[in-house]
Length: 605
Image (cartoon, rainbow, N blue to C red):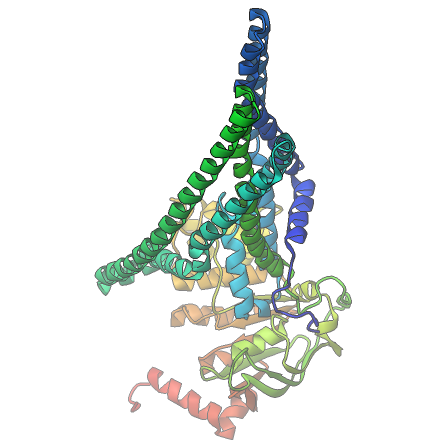
């Protein structure tokens, strides 16, 4: 039963997202958060050391220290710098792999969600949008799932540096520090408004990227190669690509104008801030005998202090944006599942299974009417059932309801009298072998495509399934046999099969699974009449001991089935054997007569 969780995006706080990332890192790569902390500490120590080098050496000169003391001071600072910079570079060189490991773990979670989520979720536009966002924020090293570690490092670094330098500057008048902070905040707000323009318009940029990627993929697609050449689509695709690129360049120009305004504001506040600090420290030097070394220390500290403040503000802003991406990612991973995948009942271990639809209706999201409407149907154990009808009658949707890919919007689907929503859905899927209209062929070996696995493959069983599917001779003629690669997107030596050969391959895959219920949705649509007849002759052998459901537009192919259903507008209009339906003279008989004219000489069309 559908969960009661809202499908609206869940609100995750910045702290919650940071803790989620740290927890995930602790499970996959503990080095990631540890290196963030160590890197921040080393940077703070390095900045403090740099701050005291010139004033420290100058102070030794002011107090007329001995040459040995002066050299010792210089040597100590040099050694500290050498050590800190060496450690900093070592840590930086070793942070990439842990950060990538965490991002890879997230990508695996996204892949698992995509592959295991309910089929109905894959039809949901909200789910699709969240999925695309999840993949985008893990697509490169610069995206939020990896960049957040750099942001956290800089935030720790700037926060720690701010506190240390605030302590160093504490002897100064507090109003000068407040003025420094105020100008930093004001300049940052203006800079953030201008620099965030691109982020606020990220959907516009994403649309341009998506369109360009789509055109590029289609231009390079093997399936489009014939159409591009035969229909002369190249100029058309070039024009579309040029138009999108022009739109994107206009977008970038507007972005650069906003960034220029932010840079000008930053320059103004920096000059004003440093000028005020310089005048204040000169006043202290002239009126309160501030030493030259102290003057240099405070002036440098004030300049660096503003850098820490700006850094904190910038990293908080960046962390907020990255948290929004992580919120979308986590919403996708936590997207509610309408099926029971873990806590359902186990499938009863019986030799035969009866499927029954009880007043079942199904309507696709945003559809105006039901695709299946108040249907009652029983698929008996061992029965060979055929479903026929015109396009849009609901045949494929019926198959999806029976095998549990979709749940009815009304009514129930029963397995041996029990609602299938009570079972573990993954276990329920195991009852079915299927050949769907839209098949999936991976660029792996023939054996792996049929077995849907890469280990423990039973080759004897594969050859038996190939024989039943009528592919034995074709595979034997291949140089590498079952080790032949399919497709050419991964392997250069891959073989491209015809539509009919691929359809037979999918049939062999369904037979290899050897489930008790066999679903065939237009399994011979791409076959020639002779090949199709060969499949029909072997149908009883293929379905021996199994319950089978056969969907076809060609009514002559249904003769070997025990029962035939004629669907129209999502309902069962006629039911019976081939002979019974012909004698009834209804819609089935009329459609059969229309189709048979094309195979009879002397008949008027």
